Image (cartoon, rainbow, N blue to C red; front, top):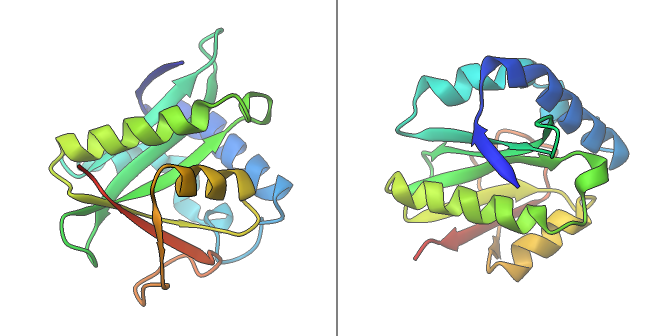
Length: 160
């Protein structure tokens, strides 16, 4: 799978992929990123602080955007990044790309100096939950600082 850093041109196709995924899993509801006004401008957020944030764009054989995954600093855990917005186009799901995406984000987090990685997800995202469990993420109680109220599972992993 080919990948690169997000650019402004990726905002629209990526937002469509994310919204379609959330609709498919009945998560197009308030409290999820579906209604986040910044979803249509993700490159602005991730490119603003490259020493603390990063977003991978994944490309298909025709160099079209097929998904993405990112990270950003989390203030409520020490030396911690949050794995954010890991989504793939429907026709690429189930191909094992999710594992590769998580590994890339973890490696980038380590290179930026983070010691652990946190994530929020939902029961409806069964495939994602399976990946996180399989890759050694440990479920934790909901942190009081959680922003997206629509998520119901929270994980953390030490980066070695």
